[in-house]
Image (cartoon, rainbow, N blue to C red):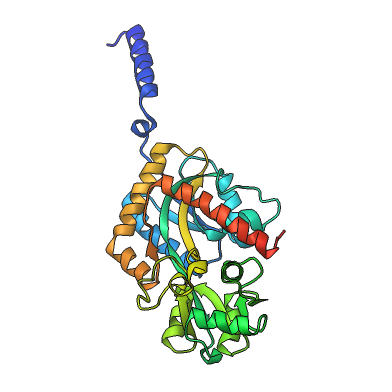
Amino acid sequence: MTHPRRAALGAIALAALTAALPATAQDKFPAKPISFVVPFPPGGPTDAMARILATELTRELGQSVIVDNRAGAGGNIGADAVARANPDGYTIMFGTSGPLAINQSLYKGLKYDPRTSYEPVISVGYLPNILVVRPNLGVNNVQELIAKDKADPGKLNFASSGNGASSHLAGVLFNGLAGTKLVHVPYRGTGPALNDLLAGQVDMTFTDILTALPYIKGGKVKPLGVATAKRSSALPELPTIGEQGGTELKAYDVSVFFGVVAPKGTPADRINVLNQAFSRALDSGKVRQTFATQGLEASPDRTPAYLGQFIKTEVDKWGQVVRQSGVQLD
């Protein structure tokens, strides 16, 4: 029979040893389901990509990864909820350019700051934007478009999905760099903007390549250029806007980026577990093939540090464009 004093001393020693062990040795992470917040409604491209990743992550982590749509205010409602969540690794967000960069300057009184409210997990990739025009506009490339505008400034227009949307700011940036006077025509969403472009009611739009591809293949819109620094693998024959626009448009680079973040203060070891699981998921054949079909370009770097620095750069870049546009939302 064990002496009571000896048993007590043994329990104390065991407790001390357990306390000295790192958290990962004390309890495996993850030990319960993970909430994967998407700050947009179900059914959109961000939601679809998140669900593909969640399926693979569930296999990788051995725990359910559950997509949680928290839409509203351009992604700010979901982004704010994640910023205020318990920093234990069980709440993460699949963010995009809006909540993770543009909204910082676009919305008044934002309750979170994408540069300081999160721990970056991984950069997933980006969807290039593309400039498409109505087929009968009478231009075949970016230089012809610029020349047509400068011959009659203020006559040509571009549609966007709304004031302050990335499709609006893409046009503002183009005007600023090219010296054009394209007139902004805001719509309530991408669908109505595209419908009027297809009907010939507006001249052009800047939209993501996933949205544009079916209309390009059907000959319903004419692509003039990819809005990123390098060509898109989905349309490799199409030059970038920077290639065609001369020195003034060399800096033109507009895309929708996708990244995963966790609340500030999430332990580094848990960030590492999540980063590695996401990286393996992105390398799986199913995810690679699906994302490539959708036109998603892989991130050049998957480290948390890269995403953190990229977010800071994008906040600064879009802050200048938002100020130039004069738009601010409540």
